[in-house]
Length: 371
Ligand SMILES: Cc1ncc(COP(=O)(O)O)c(C=O)c1O
Image (cartoon, rainbow, N blue to C red; front, side, top):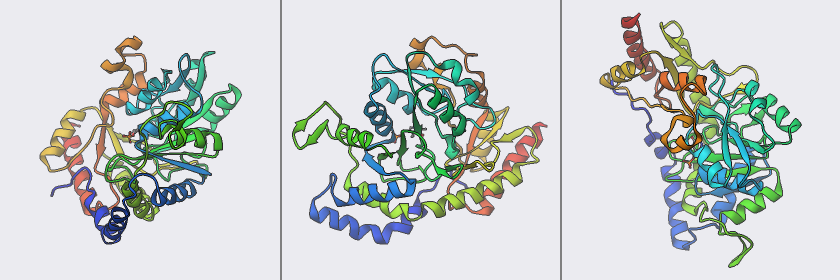
């Protein structure tokens, strides 16, 4: 049996018939940038996230960068985040002119450890970016409490967490702004690069709208310099059609995760991130296991026809791009430990129970051979 790491074709087939006439209309109208399709998507995604505003942009990285800039963060400021994330989180911080400061993650959840947050705060700290990694919301109550007490802004990196909830609240709706990526493989994925920022703050929304469009408040009147960072109409059309299936897809992902959880539970030398407690409703953008011989298991699965991924194999503080920060191995031991052992298994709404069982049986044969 062959089980790909990700298969986007079933999602396309679901919207294919409805999408083609929409594309025809957009192309016939020649309205490719902005316009009614983008505005309708923004209204629908804001409603989905239970926020007042949504600003469609051209990627998750732009959403993060525009959120920071719209909050007035820039040179001289420090922004706290985790080293166990995709580099876009810190690229947005440095590209806004600020300095990233790392806090290690909680070993049980792979998200920011709130117990370590206060020790990283300095007089220059302006904001914290918790990352809802793998679709599991970070432990937001203590993060929001500390941020409120220490006068810090909270910008959520919800790029992997479309539709997840924390104590009933949507990922992206708890801080000053929430940032989403619609990269094709995400739970809500476009047919190329796209992203969005959601917020309840009209001023942040207004500034983000200006930043995505060269800082203009009206055509050719520029209050600041900005960027080419818009969401286009064809992507908005794809996203609107796919948004209708997002809850259903997330439910299927949770069921798939439960099946993995149950069947992996007695396999020696393997651990998983515990399923959500009452506080957390994850959406399993990724399903990740932790083993000692990650390379060996990955190779065994590859030989057995099973695709896997690594999210992410080297924490940011050890990346060459951040050599200038002066960090060393041992500075963030939890992130390092997880990065050395993690392996992402096939996960998408349409993966079948038989495919999951096959992946588990391959893992079992490898792990039991080692035990
Ligand atoms: C956690 C995280 N943050 C930020 C991003 C950046 O999103 P994009 O690739 O759309 O710029 C991603 C997407 O890959 C991500 O997974």
